[in-house]
Length: 198
Image: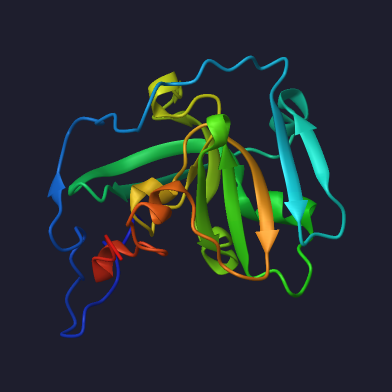
């Protein structure tokens, strides 16, 4: 099952698969602000900090030893393109949450990425079905422009929430805007509600 394609609508038929205002693309557009970072896997560290039982740091080898999963999902960019049936391979966010052991007061997560990039998520969105930290797309390693070595994939939110070059999670009691949210993008970004901008 992918996205909303198998859900029943209010009149008994399937709900639309494409959110309002979106157009399907066969390609995979590259959109980001600034340069694509150069990342050395020998120095790469994934940090788990904030409101957790114990802060953790994993190097690339340790992260790749976590159980791998595959998931297929549609993605929807705030710039109005959608790409269907993406097959991702990576580590389920639920697996990372087991390591993190968030404290009861943790309700939000600030996702950290190379170069100081951030995006924010409610903890319940990070824990959602099909959310994972991907290192492969459609059977091939992610390209640097698409987030190699690791990108978060949150298929039920606009694609800017699926941060590229991810290297950490900070658990928080209160929501805090990330880079794009500070620059006018919506704090949550539900494509079905067209939560594009503040």
